Amino acid sequence: MSERQVSDGADGAGAPEVQAQERRLHRDLGFWGLTGIGFSNIVGSGWLFAAMYAAQVAGPAALLSWVGAGLLCGLIALVLIELGASRPEGGGTVRWPLFASGRLVGTVIGWSTLLSVGGTAAEISAIMQYAAHYIPGIYNGHTLTVSGLALATGLSVLLTVLNWFAVRMFAKLNNLISVFKIAVPVITVCALIASGWHTGRLTDHGGFAPYGYVACLTALAGGGIVYSVNGFQAPLDFSGETRNPRRTIPGAVLTGIGLAVAMYLALQLAFLFTVPENLLGHGWQGVSFDSPFGQLALILNLHWLSSLLYADAVISPGGSAYVGVAIDARHTYALAKNGTIPRYFMKVNERYGIPRRALVINLLVIVVFLLPFGGWQDIVSVMGDMYLLIYAASAVAVAVFRAEPGGETAGWVPGLRWIAPLSFVVASEFVYWSGWHDLRLALPLVLVGVLIFLVMRRPGARGGTAAVESDGAGPSRPLAAELRTGAWLVVYLVALTLLSWLGTFEGSGRLPAPYDSLTVAVLALAVFFWAVRSGVRHLLAKRPAAA
Image (cartoon, rainbow, N blue to C red; front, side, top):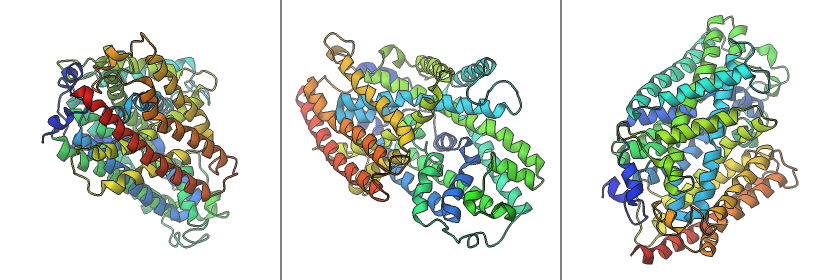
């Protein structure tokens, strides 16, 4: 069975209006183009800080945390790979939850994805913060100044223009940026190790795990490790623009994760073995730099390396923002196919195969997120966390598609029967480990998607039956049925919010560790099987109408 046939199956992906636009996408991306997209989306400016934060939390045992993060992300990636190979489609990560779990889940996940555009705005804001080292007056320490906002808007326009033409051109430019993003960390590791290697660092100063092996788990979130390797899902959103997705996507996603984890491990080793001895008087928790590798380079009299690192502090998040703009456009395009936003933004340019209207609306959203409103930056900073919900919704989707009578997937990933629930648990832990400080803002904002769904389903609304029948998900079901099908997601989000407040990740501590993470795991498993049963019933309920 071909990829296009799978995509056009009974799930409704073959709605004429949707497919007319989908066929305009150019299938020009190959293995290295997709790998570059995944790698560039993973590696932003975080590599300059994550090694220090991880060492502060776990000491040398942070090396185990990096390996663990790679394995956990690889587990989730297997689920996404199966979906991308089975149902290749532009913005697939937004579409699959709609097909598997109905319009309530599709709307809430789509809304959270739209909010995650703030993550791209945050990368652009970070670029401005680092650029202030060269251009005074664009950042006042908390928000952008007027001149900084103008410069950030200009950069946003530039990134949009660079995404305006064929996806092949986008991939080639991103590959060049990726080469630079690999070269600078490699040069950093080699230069630091050659200039100051201290033996015994894995056993001195409290031993390999001075704060216990439980700290390895804490470092996944508190040390920024999870979020340093997040973003590996990017190639999946380009599956509709990929040559032979069944063969290309699996290798590209896993290679991107592997390259990133190998790079982070090398950087962690370089940090552990080159920190001057006199800074370790209070152990690894006492090691603190404003710019870890940049200041290490200055201490070791590597001024040229320090200059290179400050330049990369602008280029690395710039590369991530470049890919972010492209991904956001595919998400907006998919949201228009879902009917969550006006269908006007679904149009794909016939000549270049790019959803240009989606690029324009995302540019406006990014500029709004850049505005220096009071407390606005706090909201922007947590929106990237909400993309983690797509991992959970995708695990449910792949299980639903396989459990549906007569259903099938590509069969590329063996063991999905246990990989899907386990990846749902891992995704839930990733969300929980984000901490109460972030989740107290993010999860209630995501639940606004429920109100959007209800508004769309009111009598006479544009999101009513006539509109949604052409979104590729089949005819609209009664409101009560849709609420029953998607109730698991609402309960899941409310329960996660409550557990975050009770738990030890910036919460009240009423539920002590490790019982808080164990409770999240039990909750996740229960919700997963509930969600799969609801999804299968949803697909079966659509069959008579489809027939």
